[in-house]
Length: 225
Ligand SMILES: [Zn+2]
Image 1 (spheres, rainbow, N blue to C red):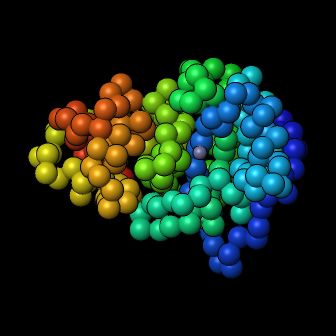
Image 2: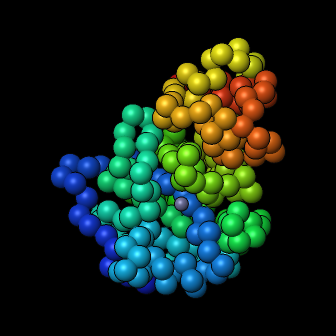
């Protein structure tokens, strides 16, 4: 695929010995792709990502993959924090929940898929470590949100989608979320909402109903297969 270089100054060396083993997907959450690209290259803003994918499928490279970009912020997954160190960050243009959340066009999703397949071919990233920003910062972030086609990506080998499963008892929900990778010291509805945005997008209400719990178990079945 053709990738256009739009270098950002906002990056650092990865810490010594930090392998890239996570892929974090975001939406930009700004009024336009151009505004997002400008911000992600602004030294005063100090933020960045490795790539930005426009709604028409144009892909920009802002930070080389071997450098640490600044996209995750305060973050936690599977007992680790500060996830910029070992991750690749991809920003996907969408106004987001604040500015008019809308479907991700097919052209854009095709480019996201192709880009992600390339990243996964270059780095040893386990499928369970392909995550949303909202998975690793559930109390702060909603992106890329419930309109994002995680199921379609999983069908292409990018991340995981739950297997059919029976719902476990309600009191197990928090422990299941912890085994998936979420931090567990947040209110349960916050964690359930994040899980639903990624793995049960038809219902994002923070309620761990039977179908939501079945999907937690079904995802763990894939993870632990
Ligand atoms: Zn984000």
